[in-house]
Image (cartoon, rainbow, N blue to C red; front, side, top):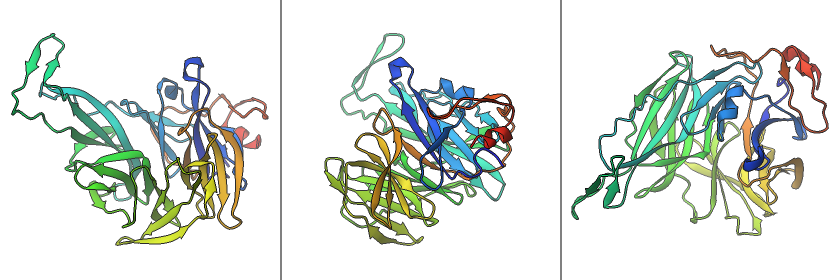
Length: 362
């Protein structure tokens, strides 16, 4: 058994102040009370990431810092693989290109080719001013009736089997949000926004390598409402809740059956809650970020709200990650030997020779 054989939930968070050596961590949550068990030893390459968002699939974690640096990691074996540079070269010929930014991604499995893949979005921004400065200090003046190009979206797809990126078609003018997304059975889903169409859902099928769209529930959603996609009882669900300005917040859970939305239930009002993080696999517990940036666990049966004993130093840095230990192999470097276990304050640090020994510590 590995160090994560009895773990099905991980938590990413941030502790400390950026100017004084603060750092992101990933902690394993124990069963069944969801208290912190131990912090995982992150690959050395992550120390160069400014920050990172985590996607999970079949025991593998994808860490993306949205600057073009990313890796796939098996935390059970310690094996990881740094992804190669983007294939979306800086070939933008229009002089009004202001900047380029990776802003969203998704990680999943293609059962047809038995391949793990990453889909990643790049946005190209165009300068809005009529006079633009360039590296050679020359200025370009646009005529009054000349329109600047609309900001462009470009997408690339990475394959573990080929260890390479390729550009893929993305015809939408929709902006997907990385932190309002989820992965279910070979398909990644994002909440997206388009100036003309409003809010809707964009999905990507890793086997067909195609994007699709469908609407959110027909209900009153206000500008500042919280909206989150989750997996609920092996189905796609969307949770809608009032903005943080509300002292008490209730959560509406809608489930998608492939054709339409059905409202599953509404929670009772909860106090001092900032946002939803997710649900347990069995759908009996809801995880939330509290007003003091702490992890809260709400039991949907007993209606009891508990503090799980984890508190971050910043708002919005907590991320709940569903995890199932897997044996997927990568061709990257292994970290399995001579690891130092990073643990929480009440557990002593120990040197261990292999992952089996780590498992014996718990």
